Length: 198
Image (cartoon, rainbow, N blue to C red):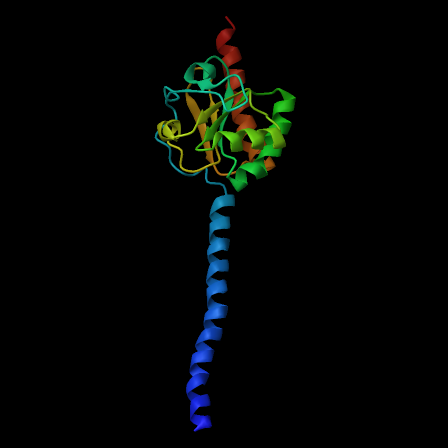
C-alpha cells in the first residue's frame, strides 16, 4: 500500500517541480523580450505629428521650479523636448547624458514630466540634477496625449519654426545622441542660420 501511495504522489511532485522551473523560465523570457523591445531603439514607431507644429499646450512648473512649459517656449530656436517620469527606469538611465548635454549649452533641453506625483518629480530632479531649461508638469497626462506619447521616455527635436522634426521613443544612448539627435539639431541650426542671412 505504501508503494501505491508513493507512486500516486510521484506525478504530483513532478508537476510541482516542473511548475517551479517553468514559471521562472517564462518570466525570464518575457523580461528579455521586454528589455529587447525597450532598448533596441523605438524611433521606427510612426508619429502623426512628424513634420507638423508642436501641439498647443501650456503646463505649470514642476513642484519647486519657477517656470512651466508651453508651445511658445519652443518657437524661434532648435530645441529638444524630453518626456520623462521619476517612476521610469530608462529615464534614469538616460538622465546623465542630458546632464552632460545641458552643460555644453549646444541645444536647449525642455522637459515634460509625465504623470508624476509632484513630490516624487521634485525629489528625482533634486537627486539627479536638473538639465532642463524649463519643465512642464503633465500630471494628468493630457499634454502627453496631445504629443502622441507612446511611452516614456520620448525625445523630440523641434525646429525653430515649432515643427516636430524628429521623435525617438525609448531611452537615449550616447550613440543615439551623437549619431542621430545632435546631427539633426546641427542641420536645423545651420539651415536656420542660412535663412536668417540675407
